[in-house]
Image (spheres, helix red, strand yellow):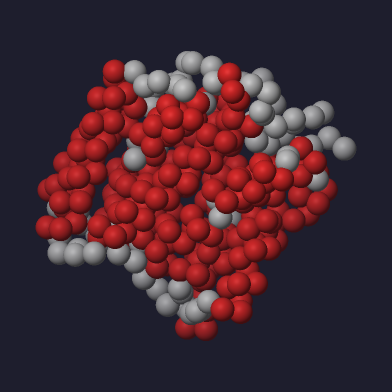
Length: 313
């Protein structure tokens, strides 16, 4: 049986279109997740929607194409873990402490610098001088955001900021593994949705607190769509498409627009007004992201030769 996969031939137009779509999806997800965390739904409910809804949608596709045939147990474990409830609960929990704009700064904004660092340590892809300068600007921008949170009397925003950074590390590993192993669409569906749903949903049902009974129908519908379908399913697939066609760091470059767009949306929809330091953070962070996300040109390290997933035909 022929597995559903992204063509090995690169198509930059397709890659850029996917990256732009991811930016729009993620900026909206910041606002939706902040609203969900402040609703009667618990963060465990949000994670249940994330994995439960996507698993129901993905199961027929996964059963038909059998993507596990192209993966080792180690690859399934690692891909599932970097997209696991640990990652989701870190991010959802962060929205309990920090505003939506901080999610854009500390997760999406820091993503290129974290990806650069991991690729340097793991894939032996050394940074350039411009990328090092960009890393400094990103660090400066995140520090300004921390200071802005303190000035806005968000005394616990630093807790959320650290959780956002941890989530960014998880997602950086996903981007690198997608590139390293040439992960196919159905392999993403298997690991991100099916495997994690089988593990998490029984635990949530039996042991974790829930607020479904008190949730408003409009909020429940919003979170079902935005957690279960749009970013968790469509977004991850678009990231895989973008990484395949334009590379992980070029995909990360597009994330430069997420913090600013997320801040504008949170101001418009949630009335969360950043302070002067918050706007200054975006002004410093955005060029830093672009500097860091210069497209990688070096090949993968020799120790990873032959490590990619056999996509088959």
